[in-house]
Image (cartoon, rainbow, N blue to C red):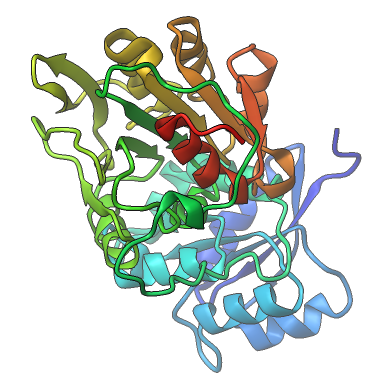
Length: 362
C-alpha cells in the first residue's frame, strides 16, 4: 500500500490543460499535483527541489519539446510519464516515438473543445496517472532490443529457458499473448527474438483504435516473422503474429484447415476493447492443449480468467516475472487465480515459447 499520495507534475504550455488536469488529479484522494510547468526547462528547475512520482507531459512546447525531455528523463532518472498531446492521435508517428522512448501511457487531447474534453475524459487521465504510478522503470528501460540481421534464426540461437510441458503431436499449435501497460516494448522484445518457424500467434495489446496498424507495421519491419493487424477471417499461420485492432475484440475459431480469427465489435470487457480475456477464452475453447498462453506486463486483471480457462483446457501458460514487468498487475492476478504454469522473466519467454513448440528439453 502506498503511504502517501501520488505526486504528479504537469508539464504543458496550455494554461487550460494545467488547470483542468490539476483539478481532476487533485480531486482524487490518492494523488496530488505537486507542481506545474509551462515547458521542460521550467520543469527541470522544479524537479531539482522535489521529484514527482508521475509526469504528465505535452509534446509541443517552447524551448524543449516533450519527446526530447522524455528521452532525457529515461536516460538520467527513469520516471513514469503520461503523454497528453494532440500529436498522439490514432496512428500518429509521435505515438510510437513516445512509447519507444519509455512513455507509460498516452492520452489524446483534441485541437478544439479542449476544456470540455478534459473535463469529460478526466477519468481516463486519472486512470493513466494511476497506472503510471505503478510502473517500475530501470535505466535503459526504453531501449529496443538490437536486431542482428541474419538469413535465418534457429532454435539454437535462443537462450534455453526452464523446461515447459511440450505441445501435443497435433501440428496445429497456436500461441496467444496478452499485455497492456509497458507491453509495446515487451512485445518488441519477444517478437524480435523469434525465428521464422514459430507457431502462429494471436496478440492483444491494449490500444485504442487507430494505433495498432502502425504498431504492427513497425514490428513487422523489426521482426523476422510477419506481423500485421488482424483482419476478420485471417488464417493463423506459422511465422505470423496477428495483433487485435484497437477498438475491436479478437477471437479464434477453427475449421478443418486450422485456426482463423474473428474481429468484432462489442462491449468493453474488463474496461477494455480489445480484451485479453475474450481472446484467451476463445483459444481455450478451440485449441485446448495445443495452445500456449502468455500474459505480460499490464495494469488490472484482464486476461487472468481467460488464462485460467486455457490452463484448465490443457494449455501451457506463462506469466512474465515481476522483475521485468513495467506493471505487474495482470501477471500477478493471473498467478493469484491459479492460471499460470510457469513464471519467466521477459528475456526467457522467447526461449520458453520455442522450447514448448519444438518439444525441446531444457
